[in-house]
Amino acid sequence: MSTVHEGEPGGSSTPIPALFAHLVDDTTLLLPRSLIPPIADVLARYLSVRDGHYGGMAGQLVCPVSRLPEVVSQLAKLAPLEPVDVSLVVDTGLGAVPKALSLVMSREALLTPCTVETAAPPDVDSTWLERVSEFVPEDVLPVVEPRRPLGGDTAQWLKAVRRVSEHGCTPKLRCGGPRASDVPTIDEVADFVAAADGAPAGFTTSLGVPHAVRRAEADANGRADHGMLNLLVGVARALVNGDVRGALAETDPSVLVHEVGKLSEAAGGAVRGLLARCGCGPAEAPAAELADLGLL
Image 1 (cartoon, helix red, strand yellow):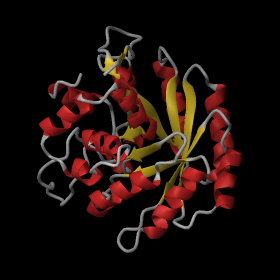
Image 2 (cartoon, one colour; image 1 turned 135 degrees about the vertical axis):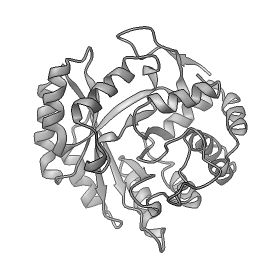
Image 3 (cartoon, one colour; image 1 turned 90 degrees about the horizontal axis):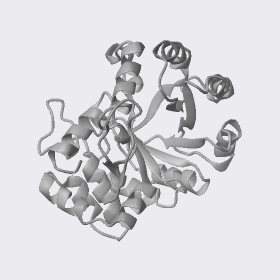
Image 4 (cartoon, one colour; image 1 turned 180 degrees about the horizontal axis):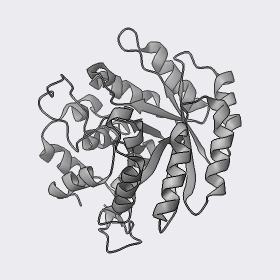
């Protein structure tokens, strides 16, 4: 696999294979408020990771619009060496987006707007999607999360994912949350990947995906979280009509590592063309796991 030399600008960094470059978005600020550290600590950790040894894996900082003023204030105190790539999550209505983007763009030394993310109703239509597009500038990607029903028929949800893709937006799959049911099943993930296949800028995942490889046993809360390598290999198989569900269910790291090692540069680029980013917290922890597996 080819590598990219990213991650400074502070000190020496490890070359990151293109398959993992800027893959991990930091979604710490999306956690329940009681679980979020002080914003100053979240930002300091993000900058430390981004500018550190495995900085080339760090993606965007995901920030709810309601927390943006505090993020800007704290970033100004930290004075980052380079602007932070930010994804704005709409949590106060689409009407708040222009003001939020104006604030970001007025602080170009601190922040670079990359994406605007918003949730959508299961029956999202072209009129609703057009309204989203009106709020998002051409150089910022609109990311839309059709809400997955917690139980019941998912056909309507998958239709919404296809509709989002056809409209030129980036579909988002929520992979975690406070309840075990917030984690989609293997079948639901595989169906989502198939439905999102036509998205021009691929799809993203949000929350969840805490480990490189799926754990063999569910945790104490009955959760069986998906693995980052499982998703990457699942997408690689989807692109050649392979066994996506088998990849998502795999718990043997050696199987996934072997398959990743066989990916050509072109195949890896195609994988990242479909799986654009994984939102799962700071890049430091997944990078350490990938390093232990010999992939970094």
